[in-house]
Length: 353
Image 1 (cartoon, rainbow, N blue to C red):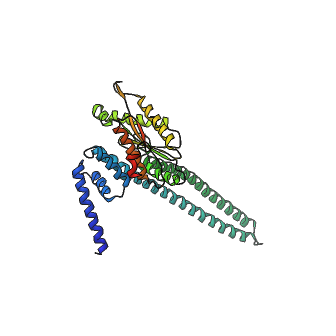
Image 2 (spheres, one colour):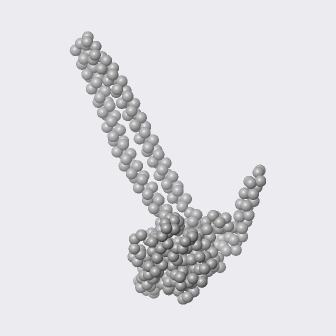
Image 3 (cartoon, one colour):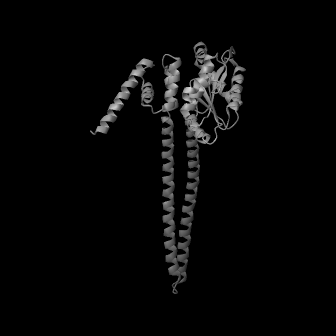
């Protein structure tokens, strides 16, 4: 074994040991998903996931099973969508192969028809043709033409069927693609899609520094889950998503990061406008009364804390997200149910500016 292979093996074992230590120290249990999350954390392959883990462990003693599921689904999941796309692609290839087979048969039939016409043309050029032979040639020509026409009708019908099938497969692939980028509970973009759009937005922002990011977190969300159950917690999450859609104009990217944290990406939006949008979302959420559907019981108001960060030259997705996160955590520490931006909290964000 070469020196390089030994080094790769030793590194992988070291990562595995460190992942096991973190899994033991921070929990929740030694499941395959937990191992995948912690191994990826120590490898550093998903810096935004690492940032999410740091935020979770900063406010809690460790990771819960639901935390691990959210992290796995947001950053490492998606295999079922790949499988579905692969199955659909294989079906489409089979359909295309069938069409190609029909085309080959049609081409063969056309070539054979051409040969028949040439032979009949030669026979017709012979001056000694009698009436019986002429009738025979005409009958052969009619039969051959009918055969070709029949083959063409069969091909046409098969092509129509294939067109319908391929269109259905295309729609299925598009639905699978959309599903892979969407949070199933709220219908907002998921973390993976949000990160892709954040990268694109920052590429454009290098020419236009007026792009902003809003991060928001539901206040006392764990209390809702503990007091009223996860179904009510899901209702809270959907409520926030609905208000975000109603409060933010088209052109923004709305996402649920996982857990009770959401993001709003605002391309071409300066800090003042982004702050105003964040405040609109906050006051709109606070103005809704949460009703337990099963009993009609009023569960009170929901509040959120928000952080706003505006793009700066040289920002990366991680640095911009970290600043918005710090502002959001500062809003939590200042009493919750408020919005803070990276101008009013400049001292807090200096380390990641």
